[in-house]
Amino acid sequence: MSAPPPNPARFSFRFGLPPSLGNALARERAERLTAFIERALSRKVEVSVAASYEALAKDLLAGRADAVWAPPFVCARVEAMGVRVLARGVRRGRSSYRSALVARAGSGLTLEKLQGTRVAWVDRDSVGGYLLPVAYLKAKGQEPVKTFAAQQFAGSYKAALEAVQGGVADVASIFCPPESTGLSYADGVEVVLPGKGGAFELIAYTEEAPNDGVPVGMGVAPEVVGQLERALLGLHESEDGKRLLEELFSAERFEPAPRMGYRALYRVALASL
Image 1 (cartoon, rainbow, N blue to C red):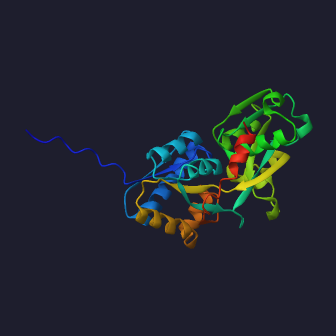
Image 2 (image 1 turned 30 degrees about the vertical axis):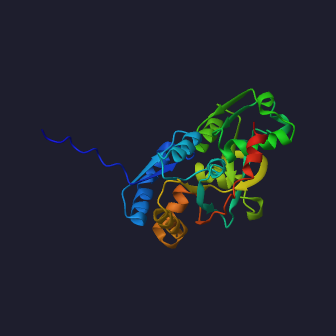
């Protein structure tokens, strides 16, 4: 009796991406990321896009992903459970960012005129796309449940902005550089919808939060963790690496993430409940 055929070998390293830039765009650029990690780790790699931020965290904690590119609140959640965040993105020379509430250009919306409008958020675990703006609104005495006539979760920044553009929503939020850079909300819009920075107008800016990071699963071998960390921190040293940083991570380089550097975000999360 012949032996059963061997099971197909699973991918040696699995890297997860969030849905924040939109599945189509992330999948389109995942091939380049796959090639980069395979060269760095000398092993086969699978890159996948999670259905939600919650799924991204669960995949990492359950071992279905070995490392992920995660928004700040996901980093805070997994870090609190013992997971190490290897590196975090640096944008415009800064390791933090803020969020902006925006509306269609010419709408004339202000904080005082939000009553009865419709908002398109990104995801309940998105810091720039939900947590920061909700905390900001509550600090201003505006409960989103009472302020907005309708709230939807679009799943990505692109979808949220397009909902505003298409008239399905009146308000959305977008990540953008901190005040110290002198740059505006339009910079964030341009990352997600190139050429559309002028199609939106500012309602308000929020407080700042740490940038996205790369947490790695607790079951990953230390030597592999070291290889991945060195590769990420050196990504900006090649032209291909710079392009990957810009197109997929919206960053100019990675820096080592301080231990428990995302802990303060639980204040933001609680304020958004």
